[in-house]
Image (tube, rainbow, N blue to C red; front, side, top):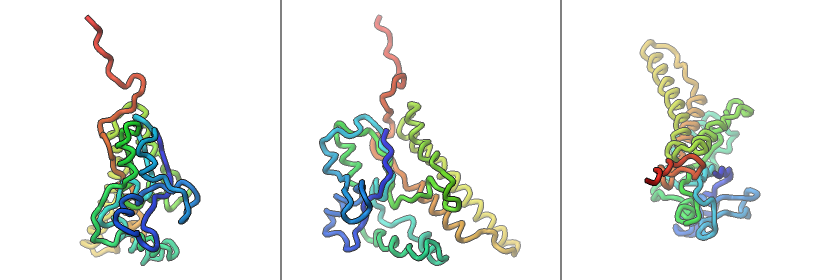
Length: 240
């Protein structure tokens, strides 16, 4: 198993030279110092060289799995920006998101890895911007939520299939979704009984950022794949 945590290449400040360049490079991994000159792990590097053969790759990076038509984070980032969050740095992030009207696409990097006969069987990666919300509490930066990410790796290490590994992470998504629904219910109760809303817009915005961060992970490859672990395969019947 491989867990990679890095920046994923997004739209440069000057824009992409062509659609083909965007399809080839968006989501490539920045594997050195972050910046325009950072070395990249791109699709053409994984075409033929052995890379995690028969394994599971959990790729935590922006656009690691692909790019949506419209980012799920845009409305909530805009709300947080209006509330003064992120010290005015949100506008630069908003400017890097897909402008709308473009076709969504899968990233070239995981496709190259999965096409490689000596590559992984499955890739779990992000289909949008990837944030730290999934594994760090934004209100208590020392509070780790890394167990959410590790739950997927642990499921595979126990012999579960790749689809089960993704669902281990989606359990956290469903918990956050339930919390948001409870908040909407409390807000409607307050409206009916003419009481002040108990919901803080900043907390709701952060909760939606967490929800969308978790929901952005998708599984590419074979959902039924399992790691070739000792004891994970059914024994062969005895010869007569």
